[in-house]
Length: 177
Image (cartoon, rainbow, N blue to C red; front, side, top):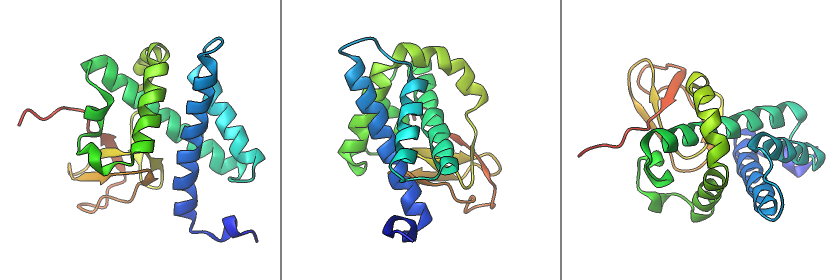
């Protein structure tokens, strides 16, 4: 068993989520010099790279690719509907988020804004988050009791600490207070 396989599965998946997001950002960086690939192709490439480098199993890479795409679609929906900045999507002090992750998310969101606008309609349907999935930074709201769970970096979604619910939505409204 390799050292990577011996690591805590949650730590391994959250680290892999961030590496996958880095690869998507890298693909979009390269694309600025030629034709812009779709977000899906960039995510597919990042997924295949994670499998090729034995960072993840095929199944794990498929799950994480789905999570990265979901988070980018949700960010796009927020940007399109509100016209706000990505910093407001996270709903808490950006100082708490690692600058590298903020830069990657902002970069991917900016470079793919037109494509993500098209995906925003689809995101409305697929914007549910579930216990056991991995998500990026932000605040999730329990669909059962309304309790907030804050993620300051990528992490696995636990059951709701208030009601043990397993369904969540991302908080995207800007507080007026």
